[in-house]
Image (cartoon, rainbow, N blue to C red; front, top):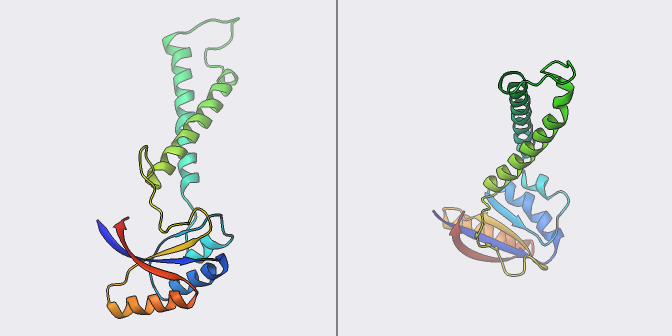
Length: 173
């Protein structure tokens, strides 16, 4: 799906941080903001919600814990019961290290997989930089282009008013 964007490039972070809330007030849809380093308060200014990755980690960890307990209980009680010094077959204390390790392993791997899926990262994907220099010293604000031409012109003028260089781009989300 091809979309049209307005790419506004800024030379300093202060202009960008002033422009982002104003763009949201004008009801323009922000695709992304590119910066060479993290900017404090940018997530709040963009209106980005908290991530749901901790819930993925929790659910995957619980699945790992359940699998570890079930597997150990099955192998020790039904599949290969061993009488070791008269101890019971289902000694819960002996299960703790494996339960911990599988909880952490499956929770961690699932979180990484969920992050890659959500971010649409996969091996061999080429980078898509919004503007030349965003990895060095340029800050870029990418906004979906409005449908009406007068709204496009108003958005362009607003961004230029914040000191941005504005270009039209076409690409895929």
